[in-house]
Image 1 (tube, rainbow, N blue to C red):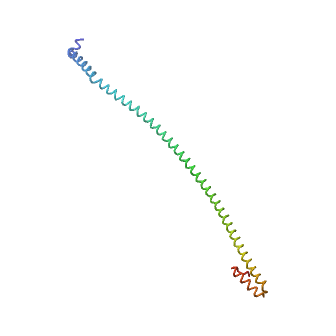
Image 2 (cartoon, helix red, strand yellow):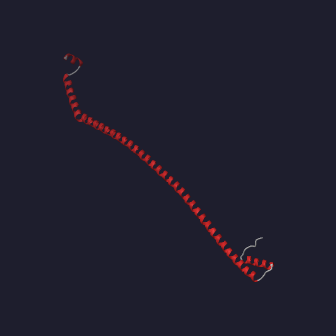
Image 3 (tube, rainbow, N blue to C red):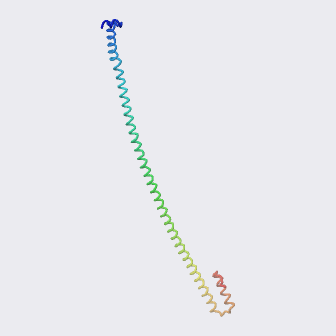
Length: 170
């Protein structure tokens, strides 16, 4: 085999030094380059895994917050709708009550006005009766004292009517 090695042009001493140099280079690279590179890669892998985990948590929290927001908005819409409906009902009831109250007040005012007109009419009629009675008494007193002819009687009646401010009936 040594013959084969020499024929191939391989120097065993040189090959031995090259193997020793390779092993030293391998040990140096492993100690000073390979371990730090592997540590840096492992640290980067952990950071990436941690970032992905945080991104997943943030996405879940975002979905939860979105669901909560939608629930709050739905609740607020329902409450606003209920408040609006209550306000509409209250306004309708107030309007109906106000109308009824206004009708009642108008009816009361109408009754009071009618009563006042009736009272005024009664006062006027009573006053007119009293005036007519006074005129009749005064005319009767004049007639009893003096026998009047029809023309004088007619003139006295016209004077009584004029003094009472009443129009003569046709």
